Structures are given as structure tokens and as C-alpha cells.
Length: 375
Image (cartoon, rainbow, N blue to C red; front, side):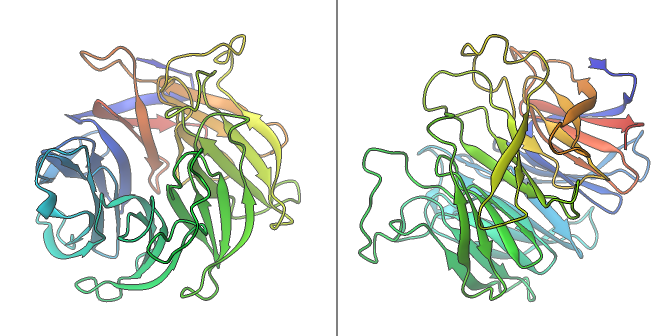
């Protein structure tokens, strides 16, 4: 374990590895990577003494590695892994009443068909998801209304023209990778959507039933990493509207140096322009290829001020200040211990709570709870 003088581990939760951590109030929700572990719910009223409250399992062949909770409702993804396990479990979203976090009760499920849902956003009423849907190639954008969480209702969907196979659309990517909506994030009446090796899209969702694309940028194949997350800043920086775009260091189109994060100027939102990048200092070396999962993965969807915590796979937690978006800089870091049996750390996701406490999950095992003086 290594940390900068500005970050300190204050607790560790020894649990199966996972894909996402999320805090609602004084409750930590952990979405796990592999069955039978689905979701672990933890009391963090005292972050130095976390207490496991409940565990929700999933059947073989599935995972439930993403979790969001708000207003007493928890939603988790159900996504198929490989061909093993019971297909009848059904891909989609599991919906739980967690008004009593120690006693989660499933109150609904949205079944999408196919392999299910990967990443999503949830604002307490609407869920912005990335499902596979019958008749479509790959994952698309879908918006669900959960005003009655026992009976979710689809209110809108969007896809790249060519994905709707059942609608007779011509498929233009025979010699390219399959389209895949990866992660929609909402801010205001815009949806910022990463689309894997098809780049990023900004959608106007003023009318939720009719999302409209207003911008598209793709850095692939010039840079061979897929677009993972598009995170807009809530206030201007240096007088400009800014979006952080993380590429993921997996599924590379060819051997390459580690993935990094881009900073885009979206002041003229129909024309996003990259104005800088950030890489962990020294990681790209001479630009030669390195193993997957060495570089960038995921920025925290929550942050304070201009410092964004990142889960940087083998490089652990990186705290990146984008106060000057033209010159992002690292202001702190924390390197978790390598899990037993693994070759390197694999920091998969990170979030913070209202106290500024950071929660960093490893893909293989464990959650580190970290205090920082940076934010």
C-alpha cells in the first residue's frame, strides 16, 4: 500500500471484487464482479468501522456489478457472462426497496432480453441505461421512468442508425466493431453517452421520449481504446464548458500504450474539441504497448470542486485537478495492495460521500476507504 501525503487509508472492507461503489447517506453499496456475489450493503456511519448489513446474491453465469441507490430505491444490473448459467434469470435491472438497508426487498425487475444492462445513471426517478434489446445489434440507450418502481415504464430510446436490425436498417459496420452504448450520464436536458469504439454522443433529452443527437466525436481507431465515460462539469472552468472523457484500458484494437483521459471543450456543444489529456506521470514511457488494465478506467461520477478521483486500474486512485482544463494535474494518489493471487492491483471504480471520504474498489478483491486533504 502506498499513498501520497494527502491521502490515507482509514479502513478496508475484505469482500469480493467489484465493478462499482456508490454511497447514499451513510450506506455504501458495492456491486460485485462475479457470482454468487451480487451486491453488498455496508453501514459507513463511522467510515473507520464499516459494518456489512446485507448481501444480495445472483445465480451462476450472471453478474450484478453496477449499483445505484437513491430515495430508498436500489437498482442493480443483471448482465450475462458467457454461455453458462440459467438464461431464464433474465438480463435487465433488479429493483429493490432499501428504505431499511439491512433488509433489502426486491420489488421489481425490468427485463431487457439478451445479455441485459451494463452501465447506467439513476436520478431517483429516471434510469438512463445501456441494455441489449431484441431486434437491435449491440447495446442501445434507453430511458426508464421509475416513479412507480414496481412497474418501470420505458419512456424513450435512442440508437445509432444501423443498429435496429429488425427495422430493416442497413448495418454499415461489417468491417468494424459492433456498436455498444456503454454509459449514459445525464446533466440538465443533455445525456452524455459513451459508445465504446464508436466514440461519444451528446443527446438532447428535453423531450425524454425523443432523444436527439446533437454531437458525435470518435477518436478510434487513431487511438485504439474504447470510450468509457463522458463526465460533464456542472460549472464552467476558465470560462468554458468542460467534459472529461475517460478511455478504458481494455478491448484495444491493437497493442498500445495505456489508455488515458481526455478533456473536451463543449462550449459549442455541437462541436466538442479536445483541449488536453491526462496520463499518470511516466506511465506511457516511450509509447510502447503495455498489458491491458494498466491505464485509465473510470472517473468518479461524484466529486468536489475541480478535483476528480479516478480509478486507474493498476495505478490505483489518482486525484486529478482540472481547475485549469488546459493543464490537468495530479494532486494526490493512493496505491492499494495487490490482491492475493493477482499480478497487479485493479482499481475498478471510485466514489466519494458528502464528508469527502473516498471509496475505491478493486476488481479482484476489497474496498479501501480513504481520507484525503485534497478536497
